[in-house]
Length: 381
Image (cartoon, rainbow, N blue to C red; front, side, top):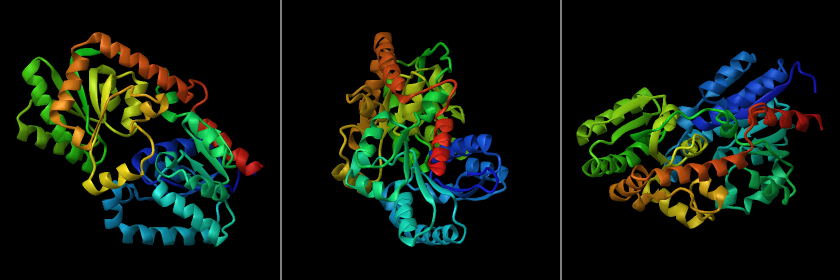
């Protein structure tokens, strides 16, 4: 495969996928400067595409829906985008179509590309978690995809058993945060991480606020800091805090710094929970979704835990407070358990370090570099 004229299409639909996709694109540009990117993603991927003389549709704000109800409400939008993307791929077939997570859209796209007969390799980066909700899709994925690049160690055997060539590249966060020193923690600081989506913040932060009020009754010297994903979220959080009348600090864009400083945390389920684990923060997982999404989810999920740390360890390393269990009283009790015991915090931090060690972190060879190498190996076969 020559460097000049190499066309790769890449599709991501959420903020985390935009981050991982952009890192992969950067690694591919480093080794193959003539590569041209097209596809769909967010601002980071669009920036990388521009540097490659390509164009990429910035659709994250509309595509990053949460739950079944939101998908149904935006069905017309996704249908239109799906059809236009399929036509673009047929008109200008890439050497490879790289799908980054986002299974609801990307798995259907892969199947449609195969059915249409578009001549391209289909590579999936960051495995969709079908092992959690529908393992019967794995044989179909093996027939559709040319390569799976996974970020969790147990996934490799799972996919290869079905005949799908699979590479374990390691988790991007484990490498990125591998050598980050953790500063001395503030024993009087509780970090609150209510999520990166507005819908998450609206559903989860009220319970965190209620927990803070209860903690303050028991230990009035405890301070609270909230990590906001954006300025808009910071304003929303501040309105909710003011209405509740609880003094706390809101910081924007500094979630990792807070994870390094806080004695303990309450963390919305998602990428942030792995960031917290990599940084050794003792924390509890919190999650709430729309009632319809929850009722459907509990009927299809086939793993005993929601948090990836617990799934990897196959035991409850961190405590999970999901939907009706995420009450202010329950969150306050767990936060106080950690805040009141240095031994409990140290034990949990040590357990988290053991889990993170299985994720393939490296100071010299990042997950995105290993993934880029796997992409090129697939093209050269």
